[in-house]
Image 1: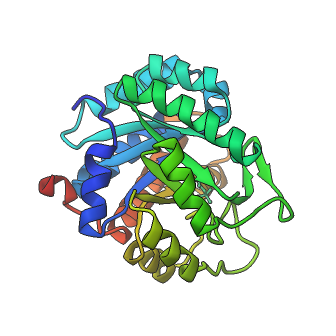
Image 2: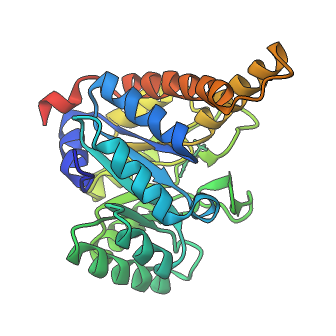
Length: 287
Ligand code: 13P
């Protein structure tokens, strides 16, 4: 299928109490792993790239690879740019086929954040592209983006209502205790805060930093209105381990098809597990 605007399936997921698992990819094999894993679960999926990956691989390469991957299968797939601070990069992504963008202007003073998000919504919506924004700041490290403990802040429910009304966003990422990257201890999500946000804001909510969050907390967040979960680290770790294992067993290995093939299989397994955790199996047949 051609790439689609993810609101086509996120809205339905919200009605059904399902979350769309959204995976950060870095290269051809991770794109294939996500698309094949999602197709085997018969579930729509969002493929996302950070600005760091765009710098590494190039927007035209990612756009072309994801388009080609999407055309091999019958499930709806969206391509999303994650945590993008640059209006120009967002426009370039749209030019190369992205169907969804996240403008990350949460570091700006509140009124400036609103102005920036409004500008992106106006441009993206006019060409049928969805927009995600963030309120509060999710801590941790995601490639070029580092938010230390002092800067991280939780989403304030009343402000979330104001933010959504003033910007016209499609989805809102909430800061309720998750962090990007590996956790030092077990995360403890603030479900009371999530419930208050849900009461005040009708649009689908997004949980970043979902790697390492125990399954029961992911399930509880789905029950309280999370409709998209973002996973990066939990794909990177098995990928690296699979490659390490290949070289441990055969230090002379030099065929990229062998070590990258092992990486692809390991990533695909996690993709399938996460889709099942989000109640996504066979969701494509309910659209
Ligand atoms: P993790 O690396 O913790 O899975 O976070 C991913 C994420 O939120 C991408 O925006």
